[in-house]
Length: 297
Image 1 (cartoon, rainbow, N blue to C red):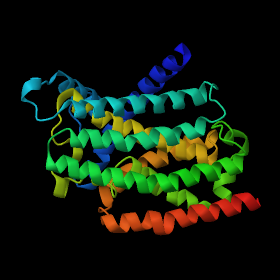
Image 2 (image 1 turned 30 degrees about the vertical axis):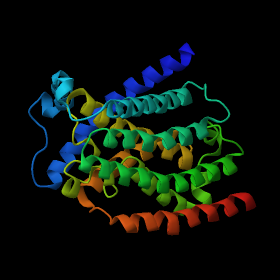
Image 3 (image 1 turned 45 degrees about the horizontal axis):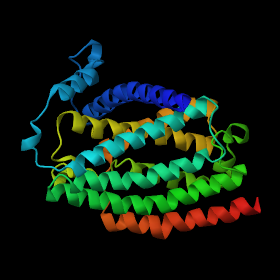
Image 4 (image 1 turned 90 degrees about the horizontal axis):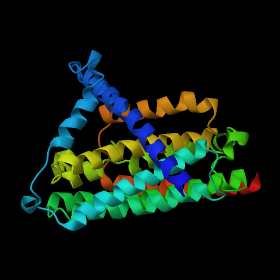
């Protein structure tokens, strides 16, 4: 038990350190893509900007009696933080060689609870904008989970089990059997992390700021940081699933993280019905076809 807790804490600390510089890099790239400079004042070349922003958000507070949200919203924030800690525990267990025989299926379990946390955060904030953003994100998560679950089963068929350390010996097997499925997986992780062009939970143009409209201070910090930790965890997981980790992880993981930045800087938001139709009409049939390939192989 203590070993699992230590793994979770270490995984969370490592993820937060990586995310601090990922946010800085994203702001730099967004700045230069819009013909302006990104953060460059705090520290050398702005390297301490993320830490300064964290300190500013943490020291802010409001009197609870004047906040327009219920205890349900705090439950949603706590649930989201707990899910991220479990993600980090799974991430740390992979490198600690302590993953069990069904470790890959735990990602499906944790992912299934993510939509409940978003619903609690949006519903408990007493804001029409927030509840609309959380409802769209929750329904999008259901569409995403159908394809993501199929990809997990496909990888399990290729590996002969659901131990997440299995692809270390199989390498590029999942990618070579069905390269198209890798594209579906990239779309899935963009949806799960609420990133452009599938950021329906935080659609600024029509929803003000989405499900986190009524949050500030430490609660907004939790929502903001959890989103970026999930980005890192799912980028890492996609590398493990399709490329087997190892040396490929060094090359593919930075490309995934750069892909998130590029997508936010360049892509427009996809219409919601097109997004739903893609997952149920294109993504899911491709995943089912991959089952046939894996079984025949």
